[in-house]
Image (cartoon, rainbow, N blue to C red; front, side, top):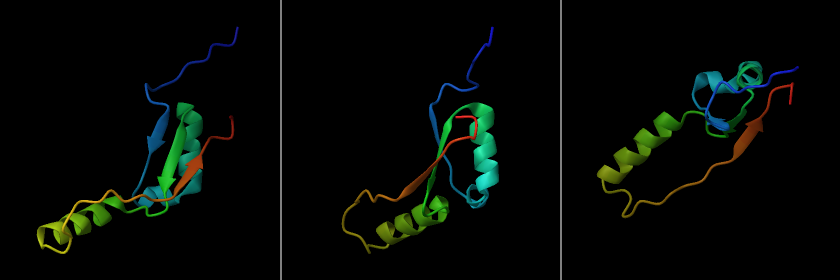
Length: 79
């Protein structure tokens, strides 16, 4: 019969950074892992987080507010 298995315990991956701008790589990752990939509209989250923490420590923010971002959901072509 046709055996189906997943390579991961996760059902969703969230990616950021330079490689997340490459649709082919994300679709390939989704197809190979049989998982869904979420990519934020702001793909360099490390820089955004560092800037936020620097502003917080410099007193530019008086409270910590959780900010949201748009997400693109990518699934492999086999789904």
